[in-house]
Length: 102
Image (cartoon, rainbow, N blue to C red):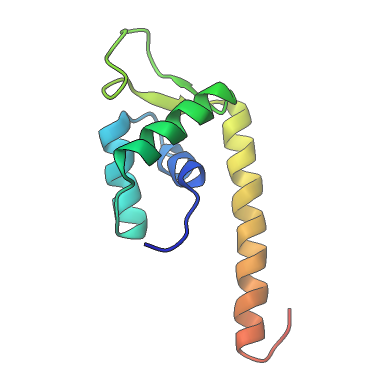
């Protein structure tokens, strides 16, 4: 697996709406071709919630692995900033590879 940041992958998976842990991992697999390990996935979910970048999508009191979560407005804003920055870096790198510095 390429060196993707687990937290960024989780935020990307949640960009279209609330998901529970298994569905987040399925979305990540569609995105990058591999799933995160359980420790990486649930560790990222825990850290993102502690940073108030994601929040429970309902008050059903589900088990942590079945509880849907969603992006907070702060999480959505941070994800957009990170993706724009990554796109800028990718464009510069690709241009350099083609011999056309950005």
